[in-house]
Amino acid sequence: MELDGVVYFATESPVWGGGRAFYDPGGRGRVLARAHLVSVGQFSDIAAQEMYREPRVALDLTEALSDGRSVLGAGRYETLVCPGAMDGVPVLTFTAPWSVNETEWNAPSASYVRVLGSGLLEAGAWDVETVARYLAACPGAAGHWTAREVADLIAG
Image (cartoon, rainbow, N blue to C red; front, side, top):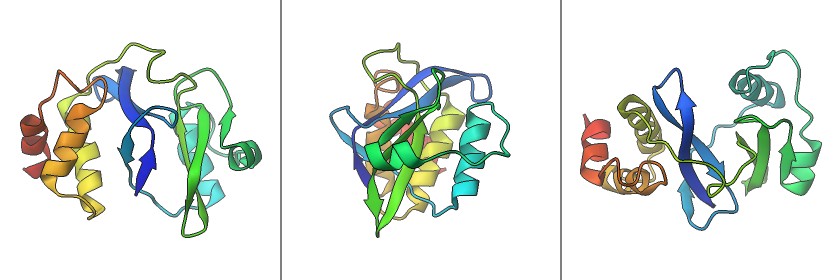
């Protein structure tokens, strides 16, 4: 699927060794995204893990679904966003409470770029070149990764 907004890389992931991906629905651009149909409990569990919270409590999605956004905390991935619907089902994701222009960007690691690119390719909507150009142009990756380097990472 494609969303309005921008994906950017910021902060430092101790797992991936580089910038993490964040979504700014207010940014100018187009986001290539992959949707998965999950239950409220599954979404709550995934989000809680990313927030470093106990994953046993269902999140209250009311505000995110009605207002399009719900800030649960100041940390990374503690903001829920509902950028629309797909086939009548609300699309939900989590991101940081800050926008693309309110933080310092940080380049993602090769392993993280490979995982993100491979996931987009598996969706089947885009080819290697499209995904590579897209990821290489995201703030934080731009100027660090070229489209050719990203293509080599995800094609192999």
